[in-house]
Image (cartoon, rainbow, N blue to C red; front, side):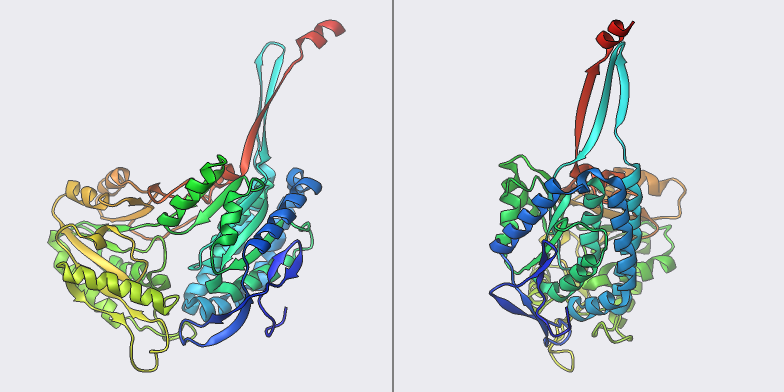
Length: 488
């Protein structure tokens, strides 16, 4: 594909257009940066058919060596196209270049990790009784439907795609319209893998949800992996339940950062700033709740306030920018309405950032970081804002800190800060979250699982457990005693 072409879908190893074209927008300027084919039911149906054919008619599901080779080829290709994809993420997704580079840096290692697992994952065998042998085979479940969000489209695609391919599944991928140009580049990179069989990976872009609904409802797609909001995850689970599909959902979060009196504040503050401003707060693990013990509350409040007020918002392409735009102006308005409602309900405005409505940045979807302090229960304490908004609460005791940290329907991640030898692990064990960091934030490793408690999801991605969603276990048993007696 050339730069001037319409960003199209990649289905059955062919570039596919759609009748309807839409414009891709740079969120930093509001300017048109390209045109994309907007998919739907027809594209989803074609992708499902191609993936199903590839699963049945090729050796993909039975050839571990092939799968490992393809995953390593993809790792090499994503490294080759690192700079192009990073630049596109900055242009279309709004990330500052360092954040775009960070997203891309996660891709190749994850692919190589699952390339290794493709060769090493195994079932088991046992002589359960004299003369009786049983084996467990781990077989791919079939076509996997992957529904990817716009906030980190490259790594969040690969996070589901890599274990799916390692397991031997074929894939139908629904990508978000907000990153259509990035999506087309991803497809172009994947298309270059020399060993990838036709139809194993199929990618289409869709602004609406009709194609995604077809994927969730199709009897030919037994597995769904979705990353996105809790509300959408509930709808997907309900629809998939009609066919008893396997569903992996990584959903919303409201990450508490719990800071005790003995914390290293100097180490905390720069991490806390990034925790609320990375990807303009559009991250499921955004550190959006600050819980501080009373003895250092003033010091932490003053320190983070000063840092947030100095954050320079601007286009991701500007090296001087600390934080890029949100994905669009509709989300800016949504976030600001949440903040306004909280202030009207009694939240104290410590740093009132908000939309940038004048000057050279007015055409973009910029929202300056905001810090609110609350002393009681209100919606903003427990709801996911998905923007650069930090809510601070003060606590007195360890028990109160745990109670506050768990006072939300979410349970994706948390962070605990203390220099005590025992307290951090003790508190971490009491917090209802799938990941708890001690004296750090957002450390995600390929080798270790991540996922949510409560309404933050079902299942796990990363680590060994990510394969489970895409596999079925088959028990085969054989009575060999009669044959042995005949031969004797």
